[in-house]
Length: 276
Length: 276
DNA sequence: AGTAGTAAGATGTCCGACATCTCACAAGGG
DNA sequence: CCCTTGTGAGATGTCGGACATCTTACTACT
Image (cartoon, rainbow over all chains, first blue to last red; front, top):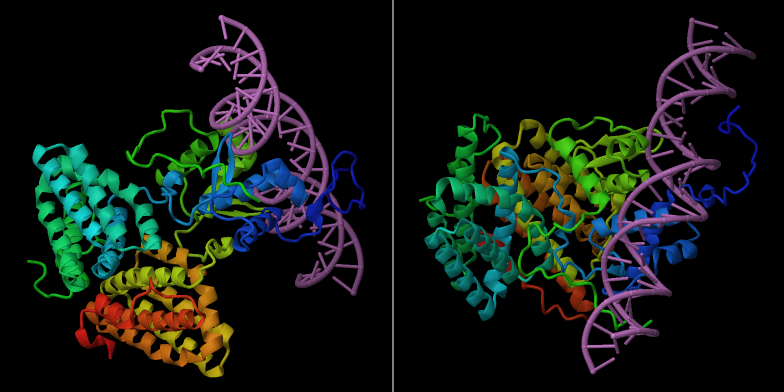
C-alpha cells in the first residue's frame, strides 16, 4: 500500500509542515502577489533591494523554490531585476530594456514577420503622432543626426553599421514620443526585426531607398503634422513589407496571409495618393 | 529602510551588444531556448503535451528545478500552459485568454494610464485597419454581438457586466485583425485598463456614451473604410482620455504630461472635423 | 601604500522526498 | 444496466538541504 489515497492525516517524520494545505491557491501565486503588493504599497520602491531568497522564504514560511519561481515570474514580467551574486531589485518602471529575456515567441520567419511589420506601423504611427506634439528641439536634432548617420553608413556600404543606425533612428522616433510604455512595447519587437533587417540589406542593397523615407518622417514631425508623419511612416514600413513579400514569394512560400502593397498603403494612410 | 548606497543594477546598454553572451549562460536560459526551439521547429505544435518534468530534466541532463523555472518563464510569456495533474502543453496561439497571470505590475495611476491609452490608440488603430481587409462575416457578426451585449449591460446598469462586455468587444476587434502579435501586445495592457475602466463606470455612469462609439467602429469596418474606422477608434479612446484627464485634474494632480482633447483628436484622426 | 588573497553574502543548480491534483478504469451497489 | 465509489498511475506543486559560482568588501602581506 502506497502513501496516496485515503491515508489518515498522518504527518511523516522529517517532511516538514506542508503549509500548502491551508491555501487552495498555489503558493507561488500567493508569493507573487505578496511581492507585488509590497511594491504597490510603496514598501518596496524601484531600485530597492529585496531580502535574500532564504530570508523571503523564512518570512513567508515557504520553500525557497517557491520564492524563486515567484521572483522568476516577476522578472519575466519586467517587475524585478535579478543579479547573481548581488541580489534581487525592483526594476525601474520600463526604464531599462528588459529584453534580456528575449521574448522569442514567434521567431519571425516569413508571414510571421509580416505581422511584426503590421504591429510596427501601429506603434510607430502612434509614436510620430505623439512626437508631433511632444518632440523637443533636442529630439528633433537627435533624429536628424540619426538620419545622417544612417545615410552615411548606407553610402559607405557598411551593412552592419547601416542596420544599427537604422534601428537607432527608429529608437529616436519612439523616444521623441515621450511615452515609456509605447517605447517598451516597441523594444519587444525590435529583436525580431534585426535578423530580417540585416538579411534584406545584404540581399538587395536597397537600403538607399529607405533614407528618403526617414527624412520624410522627420520632416512631418518638424512640421508638426501628424497626418504627414503617419503617412510617411506607413509608406516607409510598407516598403519594407513589400520587400518581405517579394522575398517570401521567391522562396516558394505562399504569401496568402500577407496584404498587397496597395492594400497596406490604403489601409494605413489618410492620403489616397500617398502610395506614390 | 535606507538602502541608497547600492545603485540599482545597471547594464551598459550603449553598445547594443546583441551577442554579449560569450560568458557562461544560465542553464535555465538554455533550457528555455531549447523548448522554444522545439516549438519553432514544429517538433512541438500547439496543443501538444510536453514530456513530464523529470523526463525533460533527464533529456537535458539538468535538474528538475531548472526545467521548472524554464517552463514557468514560458508560461508567463504565454507560450506554455501548465495544468496540475495533467501536464504541460504548448499553448494555442492566443486562443484562450491566458490572463491567469494577472500582470498588475504598475498600478496605473493618473498620467501612467494616459500612456496606456495612447498605446491603445496605436494598437487599435492598426487593428481596425487590418480588420477592414481581413474581417470575415463571422468576425463582423461577433463584433455586432459584443456591441449588443455591451449595450444591454449598460442599460441594465450592471457595471461589472458592462466592464466585461466592453473588454470583450475590444478583444473581438483585435481578433478580427487576424494578427496574433498585435493581439498579444494588446492583451498585455488590458489588465492595466481594467481598474480604470471599472472606476470610470462606477463614478460617472457615463458608459452609455461609449456604446455609439463602438457602433461607429463596427460600421467603419463593415464599410471596409480604414479611415472611418481609425477615426472612430481615435474618437472613442479620446473620450476615455478626456474622462481620465478630468479625473486627474479633480484629484489635484497636475496633468501636465497629458494632452488636450483637441490635440489628441487632431493627432490621431485624418478628418479635421472628426472631433465633433 | 598597493595588491593579492580570502571570507561573507547572494543567486544558480542539483537532488531526493513527499503532497496533491487529474484522469482512467475496475469494482461494487442501486 | 447505469451510476457511484475508490483505487492506482502519472503529472505538477512544494519542501528541505547541499554545493557551485559570482560579487563585493575586507584583510593581510609585500
